[in-house]
Image (tube, rainbow, N blue to C red; front, side):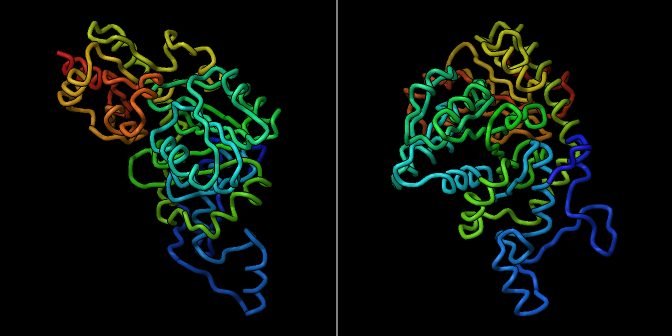
Length: 391
């Protein structure tokens, strides 16, 4: 799946399934639900060999394969699989790896929908899910037990920017015979969880991988054996397939990912530094700020890139947060992030509104928290907009 002689940035532009006989320069878009066979014998052979060839676009399509190969190169993975959305990637991960009676550990600071899926849905099917508040590895170690099969960490987390020690969590998982999966949505290209010991990486391709807020998609990347034998069977029959069109769009977005992540990170750092000087701020979080409680670990794991997310804690509560959001002119009020356009959201009443209030408080998702996704506009203009909204 990967060419060891080429760097990930090159593979994001060049990896794929190759051109058709028409010798197109841009990747072809295969909008077809099915594929034909040379004979009945050929059809039988193709159906008997999982992942051997293209059969049906629910589980095999050349455009989707091209995207998967690009992300496998990005994450230095043996194999990658594409899904319809980031949440369907999480769903497929747990459905493929877990059965009734298994135990899953998940960081409590994860995305709100992840918490709802793991904590509210899977226990109905006999999977015991335990949420771990805090990033201290010892809390995960104490919670792991013989039935633990999966640790799922989001780092940096959404929206409190909690940083997990990926290498330490990998050691804990492997000492119990479990796997570590890392949601790498916030800092792709900068952070490489597999090289730090993680077994699986998941992405919402909807975010930075696309980069322009156009389509939905998800990615699971990791070792070939576990993805092929345990997760792919669920994808094949369960149907959480990424559409070829969406795969084509995300694949084109990946060509500029290294440039965009650096630009997002640089602009977000400028915004964070400016907001730190504002007296109306209680505190400001960005992983590249020395004031971040796990700054050194974040910079080590993320190769010096802070990412594009800035979390602001205003003095006051919901009233002040909403007034600030409503006064902004350049930031789009939307829960999505990773877009070229800067966005702003109030997590306590949107993405994490269904998380129990007491847990939100433990995680720092308070009423005065405002999450910024810093886009590709001029940082000076963004800072001017923020300062103007603060009055």
